[in-house]
Length: 323
Ligand SMILES: [Mn+2]
Image (tube, rainbow, N blue to C red; front, top):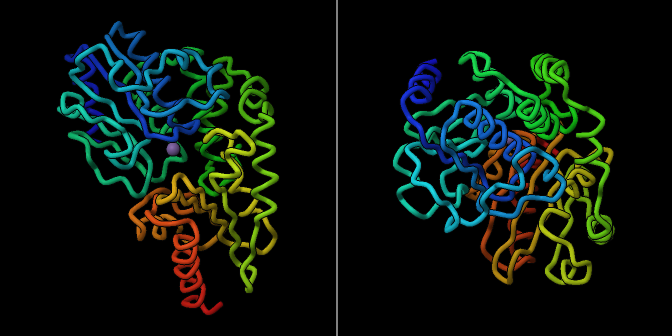
C-alpha cells in the first residue's frame, strides 16, 4: 500500500506531530492516539495528543491519557504533521485552526471515511483502528512497548465489543494474543473499562429502559434520553455509553436506536443492528456515519420530531424488506 511507504518516509523526515481523533471518543479513538503518541515518544519526536472533547474517566488508567489536550487553545506546538486516527470525517476532529490541517495523515477503518487526508490509510475490514496501527507498527519496525500494547488491546477490545461483534475476525484474536504476550493485563483492562460503572450510568440506564419502546413488528426498538433525565441523574455524556446495546439485545430486535436530546433543537441518534440492516447507510442518510452494525448522526429539531422522522425511515426500510 502506497500510504504505508509514505508514512515511513514521513516518520523519517518530520519531527513534530499532532495526534488526534474524533469527538465523543471511544476506546479505539483513545487507545489509538495513545499508542501512536507513545510510538512517537519512543522515536524521540515532538508530539501532542488532542481530542476536542471530554475523555471518559474509565480510560484514564491508560499511559498518557492524563496528558491528552482537550481544548484546541492548549495545543502548544506547531506540528508538521497531523495524524488523524479512527476518524471518518474532518469535522469530528474539532480543529478550527488551519495550521493543524496543512498536512493530514488519515488512518481509519470507518466505511464512511471520506478520505480527507493528504495521505489516507483506510481499511474498513479492520475491526479497529488499533488493528491497522498494530500492522503498521510491525511493518515499519516500530517496537510495541507495554504501554502501546495496552492501548492497542483497549482499542480492539472495545471496538469488537469484547470480541463479540461481527467485525471480530481471526486477526483480531491473533493480534490480541500477540499483545497479551507483550504483557497486557486482560483482567485489569476489562475491569477498568467494563466493571467500574458510575452510579449515574446505572441511574440513567434505568430511566432509558423505562422509556423503551418496541415496534409493532418487534424488529426495532428505541429509547430516549432527555435533558431532564440528565439533570435528574447528573449523568455525563460518557455515562450514556453502552445503553444502546441493551436496546439492540432484545430478542427479535434487529435495530436498536437511542435518541439523546443534546439541546432544545438538536438530537444525537445512535444506531446498532444485529444481522442485516446496514445502519451506516441509515446514518449517512441523516448526514452521519459509522459502521454497518454501529453508526450515528446528529439531527436538528425537537426530540419528538426527530424521533418521528427517524422511526418513519426505519419503518420504510423494514417495509421494503417485506416485514
Ligand atoms: Mn474505531
